[in-house]
Amino acid sequence: YAVREAYAINPTVAACVNVIAETASIVPFTLRKQGKDGQYNTIFKDPILNLLNNPNETQTPSEFIQLIVMNLLLCGNALVWKNTEKDMDRGGKYNPKAPVTELIILNPDYVQYKDNGFEITEYSGREKSPYDGNKWEAGEIIHFRLTNPLNPFWGLSPIQAAYKAIDLDSKILAWWMETLENGCRKDMLIKFKHELTDLQYKRVTNLIQNQVSGFRNGRSFMILGHEANV
Image (cartoon, rainbow, N blue to C red):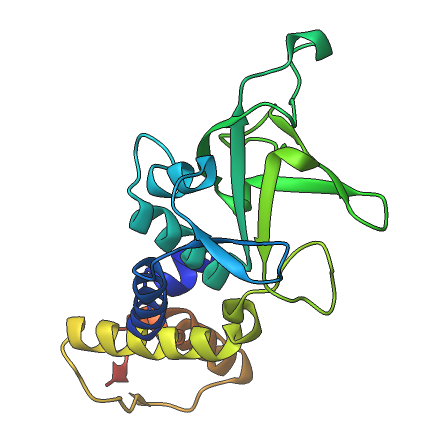
């Protein structure tokens, strides 16, 4: 919804999200491990680094990080599935000790969760979504989220907090777009040759509201009854 109603139609939102996500995606990652002396040593070979450098078959490392940041900014949550070899002794379920073969970013709009009041216990696909029927144990998902004072389990995006301002800005842009497409005509004065009864006045008012009001009807033409001058 944030993508459709904000990112895709509002150039300010798109520019801000793109700049932040692209900047974050070019930051080099290093792996450091604390030694017995308390000092941190840089690690150059490790399976974690292999995953960061080659998260999956369809994304480069920068594209992977960029999409995570975009999901955080637009949805408040970024979900990464750790794909591993299934443990057949556990009925094909997730094996936390198995090596991770790839990292797959899930669309947070298609995922719901269950919690026990203290932590998330399970993730699952929403009904009628591409993930419908899929379930993931909590350990299978790396869950990045922005702080949400209303819900500790699900993040709150800046888009949600600023939605009214973004919606107003988007409607202003849409209004001017409709105005340009409708010829930039000025507002009009409607005259009738006779006095209008209360019923006629209400009928004309309703016609005007239905045909003119709202940004989708901005500066469009209007159809009235007989003996009316515009």
